[in-house]
Image (cartoon, rainbow, N blue to C red):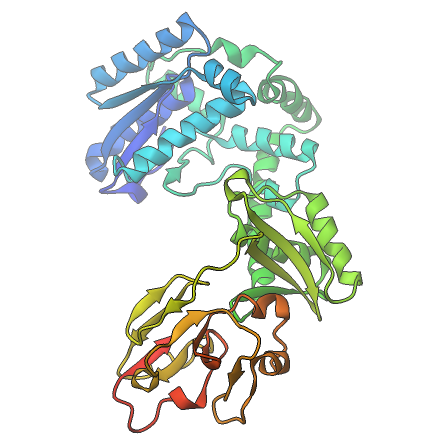
Length: 438
């Protein structure tokens, strides 16, 4: 019997998350048996959570002994999870999981392995689906247990029973975690009571739940791609059309919020507040939550014309500056980041946000700043006008125009970054140093 084919991991460094339980013993042994053939460099990681007292110490020693016997390098990490819970709050299960995945990320980031393999299997997927259905998760939540960021799950198509049979056939020892029998833990209740009840209704319930998870993941990916394609990107912002079908509108909004704050936690209530804007007039907005790490910054959803626009801005912090502008290749960080570089040929002319300029046409004393009263611009091949009227004609809302970086000499605006250049800095046949700003 073979649990999985390791050929896809050929010539890679694999670190197995090793608890000493039957699942991780089966995973580690399966890798060990194929390591030489597939030229896999194998190691293991054991985390002692400090939760189960002497039993936890026993499991740690078991893992040490087994890895020594099999000639597999083992890293042991000991963490006092109960102490962390007292200091930081939260639940024991959630904290222990955060510790594990934090250790996985650190191992990968430091180059200790190419992949970290966990022993999650098909029954784990079925249990996760039941839990999330009970909690009210949408289709995205049905993706259940996935591979990401260097975390691999070779056993996702293998059942718990198949793993146990494999371990027994090969005479492999393992340890039992006594807490796995405690049905006060939600996962254990689902494993020992809920899922068996479904199996009584239909003998293939777990298998069908896994198949459902696979179909849900496929459909979720399709809907997500479709939603992202409907997002309109303009002037450095992402806009969601208000007339999108509900299923795409919600996904597009969630995508935009997470682009603004990757660690933000957004609920259906947040989406519902944004949906209300669809029936309100332009200018209306709702404030959205941000993680504590982004304190002092505001995230808002605005209704502007036929779109919902997401705006991330610093609350109550005036812009410093102005900043001197030297017409050469550089990265300008304020008032908003943009780049200037030199290019001999217009290889990026297909991108509207990139503006092509004659770097030698900028007069001395130019600065980078935001717009001011009295600013004027003579746009490329257009008559002179106030900057305010120019931006209004371009249908750029004042909310955004106040933050746009401009390159100016006095009140003469030469570049509105991401929007337009003045006629005086355009590229001509006499241009020597061609610049691109974007």
